[in-house]
Length: 582
Image 1 (cartoon, rainbow, N blue to C red):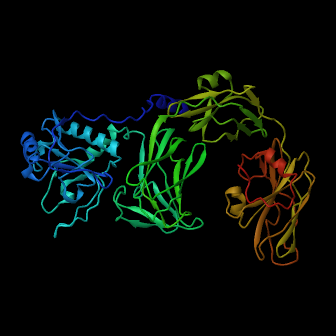
Image 2: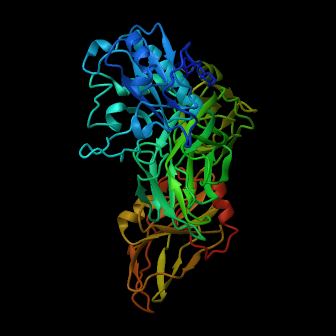
Image 3: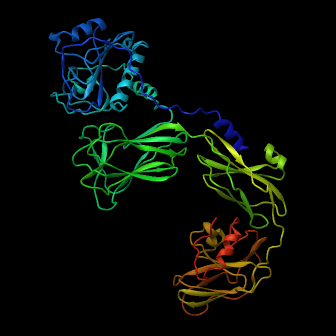
């Protein structure tokens, strides 16, 4: 019933809306003469101030030539008015060495009073900051740190949403300790449509991983996202690689945007590769330009979860590649997947069946449902069973009842919902044949210090044999999950196998498995082991011990595909299988 619960949960989720530019709040244009015309650098910061006085008095003062100060915007105490004193394209006089790169917003009130931050002024501040961040590609982050306090210096270079106190800590405290920076970031992101399903992975976040090579940490370059960035020297081949891997709450189309500090020594073809639902796509990015803001490298389909990611390698032109932040910005939600098609059921033996189907677009995973009647399957009651198989298009179901008829279907789902695919025919019947008896007369003869000949008597009704070996009896019994377990497959008429390439002076435990479509059985030798200590026989001959099983293949732990084993029978007998397919 797990699938039904999942369906009830996912169909309640709403599709994400498309992103749109926030509107600029209504502003009163009342120009101040206190400004410098134009800018010589990119806007990458918004500085939040408090007026330390009333709205009307501050507007009047900032227009007075004697003030020697101004701001771009002043917000009234109750949020009912915003006055713009200086054009965004010009430099207001509000934050000394930050004037060229920043827009200044004055909030009417006092840094030392909690009453400044009312539900009148705050929403207008959030609206204005969201508009400016979108318009000028300013990152929505509050950077850490301040300039050196004594003596006054201009060594603070934080980008994003900055407090006046960070730029001039020697004589400014605004906007003060009562101002909630986390709330500012959250509210601005909500207005930008980046609060629900978008994911930004910075180089300091858990989703960022250095996969190989040497990546240094830098802070000095202007226009980086967050506190720092990483960089690696270029190479003719890949010697350094890193990755941004988000955990996306739902599948859909996402725009992938990069943030990095540009510079003349950056690679002009830094290879960013997006791994998405349809494969991978590599874009060479010129990091000498387009820095200090979000730079788009395209829209891609992503599944829910962390299967999609971006990688950067250093096989590029001189001199360095920059790893900073990646924004996975949702453009649209994934629709519910279509019903899976081309469903097939291949009965392997009396207890195992192989299911297969075609992939469905946008499916985050699949459920395989079975029941002993069509009514039980439809109602998901009685004999109904199901299993979640993940994002794959095949599954082997083991342990079914010999001779029983089963009805079945496959369900494709994602966060938006799902659909069932039904097979034709609607049911299958398990085989009810008799598995072969365990092989007898097992013996091992050492041919050299690296080879052993295994022999056994033929069993009736056999489709093939598998010879299993391991360096401990526990690994032998564990089968494919044993650390030293190996096996080889031979055809139905074979009664011996020369195993070469063994390790000198090593003891091997062994057995032989006879199988057909109904199942199989293991025969165990006496003695149970053979040692490669030289060129003489150290293995014994003896009666084959019975070992019942319904594996349906060369296996020690059930659920193997007989069809796969049949293919092995036509391969060269000396081919070593380090572990059987599951």
